[in-house]
Length: 309
Image 1 (spheres, one colour):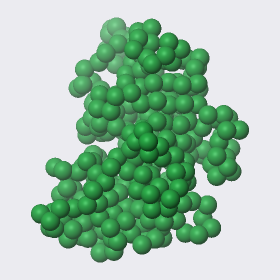
Image 2 (cartoon, rainbow, N blue to C red):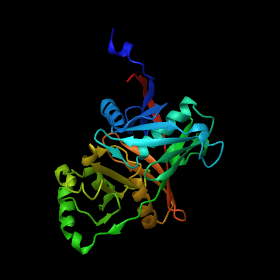
Image 3 (cartoon, rainbow, N blue to C red):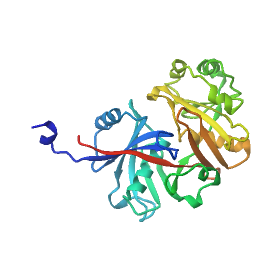
Image 4 (tube, one colour):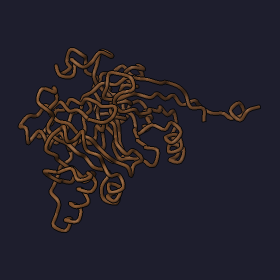
């Protein structure tokens, strides 16, 4: 008799979603696991390694939606893990989790709330295709809705004088690419280069980027998109210390990117492209008053199954 037939386990439903894209094998993949009971951190980390996606997120329902801001709004606990460790926030995996909930019809609601350990309540809203921005709807052919995430805005500041050594390290990290401006958030190093074309051409030095691991999650590189591209801004994101050398489409990085470019370009609505190998499109709205960033995109489910452990 096999080990599986002897063990009494509750199958855990999971799916893999390509986020911020309307085409399979584009955007950023994430695994989503729906838990019926709490599991220990070692198990969560082991599953993330087994599924081997850039990020695996775990959902568990609040009982009777207790604690939701409205009785009709379903609420889930959410946690995110890379292959190496738990992370404090992840945009593309939250979009993946939202798509999983909406498409599987777990709840009859156009809004879902996620209770996160570090950033409180994060909200996702299902947006009908007719309400989508013209820029995104032109690029979308899969599904009849987008997902809009309500995330915190991350502030940026300049380097202090005692950080001068980091400027040279940043230059080494970019393999000599010129940075017009170097800022930092509480999470990442933020580099502005002269153009979107130069963003795409950056060849990162991951060994240098790893040296920032004690203070920063990773490095954002961003610039203005080329005229006629249909985008406002272009970016890339490198985070080798989290087990992902280049994040294909990083929603949380745009919590800093969007406010920065909103001020520079004097517009609250932006269309962003992440110039990674797989690429992805994000429609952004900056809410200065409430210090929030609304991140809108599509996703597509590419795999579904069950865990029997």
